[in-house]
Length: 207
Image 1: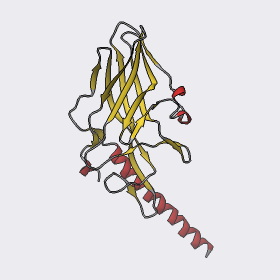
Image 2: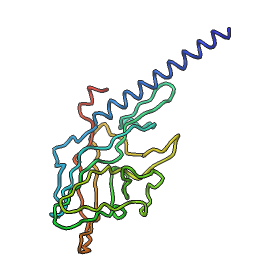
Image 3: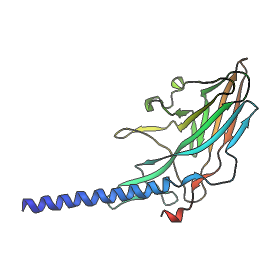
């Protein structure tokens, strides 16, 4: 009898693991299709000082469930997984003959319902939302840097997670990046750019 119970328990665990894996696989299939879906530009010249290029959306999976207007997956055991837009990857180039400093602590990222200072790639998640923890980016003349710019909304749930915006089934989302920059003469100004629409390409092939 004990052996039968152990076999049944093992089968339940195996089936549950398989279903969970299927849910994650479905969510990842959608996440892999999230990209820029409109013909709007991805490269911007900002006040003849910087060239900002959005290279890709930053998309990750969340253990969350949303309503039917968003991509979200749930199994019979209530295991959930959903792709979320956590920010954007970009390249910033100084096209002047002077040093330019990007003041991230005075800059803002807007994604869906989130608007605030960003969390930069490589920063501890515990520093999210803390302006004093955001380092400046110093750009020498002609220098370019790659940056991962995320929403600074995090939570701890068996580890730290960025809480991004759910991916809508209709339409899409945009990221807006507003940068405070300071030149070598001390002049401070804001420049901004917005990504093309971000959504799922060919959704019928992954659902």
